Amino acid sequence: MTIRTGPGPAVTSRLGYLLKHALQHLGALSEEALAPFDIDDRQLAVLLLLANNDPMSQQQAAARLSIDRTTMVAVLDALEVKGFVTRTPHPADRRRNTVQLTDRGRTTLESANAAWDEAEQAFLGPLDQQAAAQFRASLADLTHRRDSPTS
Amino acid sequence: MTIRTGPGPAVTSRLGYLLKHALQHLGALSEEALAPFDIDDRQLAVLLLLANNDPMSQQQAAARLSIDRTTMVAVLDALEVKGFVTRTPHPADRRRNTVQLTDRGRTTLESANAAWDEAEQAFLGPLDQQAAAQFRASLADLTHRRDSPTS
DNA sequence: TATTGTTATACTCTATAACTATA
DNA sequence: TATAGTTATAGAGTATAACAATA
Image (cartoon, rainbow over the protein chains, first blue to last red):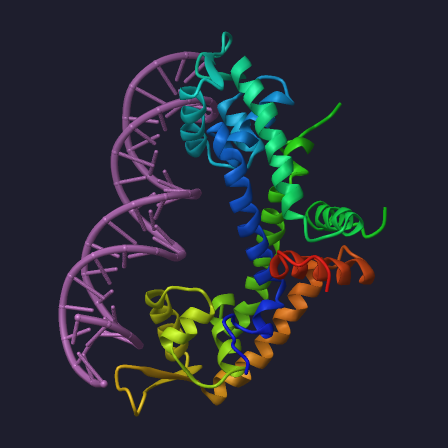
């Protein structure tokens, strides 16, 4: 007796199906890991961006993360309410806001980032160490190196 | 001088970021590959499901693919208009529709499925054959085998 | 006139609720 | 009353358009 609950191998072996479900699973793990810090993945990406670069305007930050500037407003609103970032008018160009990480933001970033790492580890749990490293490397190749096959 | 356009390694090395962009890229390739057949990935998944199983009701098909039954209505509407599937009332229970692949649907399925395979090949292009096979295997492990580490 | 941040609007996608016809 | 299919409605998420302040 074959009790089939899924769509069958013709669908489940498709790369798109696998990637979609993998992302979904990782997303669930990440959300759970970040929840205690009252932050989500996109907000954390903003904190990471700010922590690793010179202060920048909202529009610059939005461009770097490939999200719309109108969407960035809402993300920063949330981060500002939580006290993770500040918006200060740029002295030379008062149209711009300079976005900066607060101490609290930096502290939260470090803790949340560590939890994020752990969620990734858990996600990769089914793979042995070698396979996990290879998987990560291949994924990086696929997204970053879409030309120039060798070195 | 370092001209940085992306968010930087702290973000781009995250698995979630990589998976998301990989899926996005594959999605674009697939969409392009399937366009000549006037079909999208979800519709093709329905055809694949029907081709590899006994005839089933709309609700059964929806459950198999984990999509809402109300969403399935629209998907089948599109497939029916194109002449890829037929809906016929179930003789024993006239509330149900039996969904079946037409000859035209089967022909399109075969061509489109081949194109879909090619899109996957193109997506995996940056990886050598061994790495591509390993990547696929690891991905399958990650989505299907979330427990029971060995065999 | 062009640009930054903001707000308002529209659009897409999907889920929920409500309706019909059968059982 | 319960279920299959359908339709209508509402919600989340995001993009587009419009606006105010500044350059």
